[in-house]
Length: 195
Image (cartoon, rainbow, N blue to C red; front, top):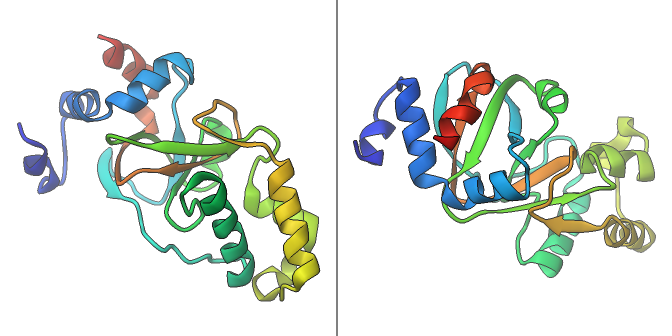
């Protein structure tokens, strides 16, 4: 069946899900086998569907971070990697327990070309910046001056962010669309993807 036929469905069979992932996620599956050593990329979500196709939100606004800090960080990622990783990405992790904190567990597969950015030194950038810079109680309204801006940039430069690396920290996934399959399929999915 064609991809557009699935987009109008509310439910998919497990075999359909596996077929779509194998057909449309080749760059990620190649890295999944070599770089990520067959470890799944997870994301915690409010959804209760077994399978879904999502589009990356563009120009995502921060919920709890000041817009000034968000823009400084986004601008740094753009200068270093050519992407605004905080406003045009999906957030995931190879750490199942970390993902479960944010909601129902889903396994994520970027469709087509993708890039993931992560640091082996930063588990969660939002939390790390908050502990490095300011008390969380005033985080969303925090005002940035040149000294704070320099501190943020210095922190980012020392954080060792890289593309498509495996670690158990936050992964900023840049792609157009991605599949989400419920974490309940974790125990059988690996074998089916390798067939």
